[in-house]
Length: 413
Image (cartoon, rainbow, N blue to C red; front, side):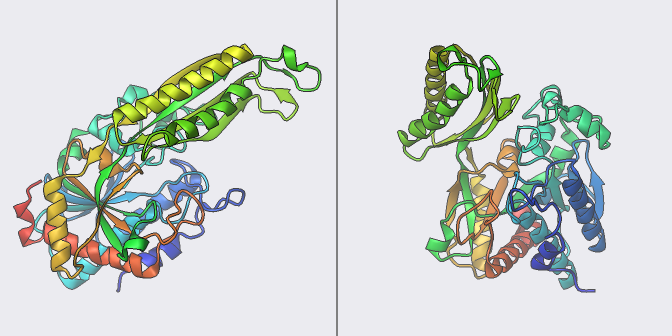
């Protein structure tokens, strides 16, 4: 039976995790929509004749042949940001399923182990730290720290993972050492390819980035009875942080800083908050710019808090240095694509984090980007053109042939 194409697979999951309030999709790790997608992926992989297993950190592996060291691994994630688009993550997964289906039907046999992986909690939308599925097995985050992360309901990652059947999260040398090369296909996040006239690009690097938690403590009180001079309102310094982040980033070329999430306590319309927590996301070209932005925001919030009689605590939740993808793998990938008729493929940096960026510290990794005509991502309007999706699968097929065929051994994992 003919396998389903990437576009057909995307249609199969179009109703899973729709967010009626935000628009788009909300598919958070271990919640019903994401759990449904995990089961869907396992079923589709088995239909292709792949062997499915799940590791101690809830990552799903679908193997073509026996698992073993030196494998070519491709895939992405199925979770989303709140109200995210349809392609961020799933496009890499469905493209991998489509590519493997085409290769199996063509009679191709890989010369090295090959797997499709679905990483857990890539977006960090439920527990605050992105790419836990790759950070944990690679040792980039300790199981103790990851396990203590909490969701909005106060449940820890450790207890939620254990309830889902994963009580033993942590470093996984077996899983990590099986990966010889990792190639992640992802929808473009930003608008470069439309202007370049290319349906695909190869990744060059990932900007360094991090997330910081800003807590401002004040004094909760009645909004209608507390005079303005008597207030210690943590919302004022927190609101100023938004402006300070914009100003600090604008002062540094190529930098980005965003506060997109607030949690006031208790959160009533007629209540002065007792505490406001916000999250600062910073991305820049250098450590000096990244840390400088955080310092500028911290000083602005601390000054405003002092004027208001509030206290401030700023803590780092995650930080990733700039990632430059493996040069030998990048060049090999470009050569494979040129041989397959793609011509001169652009090589682009990105400001978005990915599991490929985390794994780059321990194994050779590369990325393929698929054109996003509007550049919008992490929003319902995110999309990729049909012809670009098809080109992405074509590129992935060529890459697997080149890296896991007879010539694959020239770039040992």
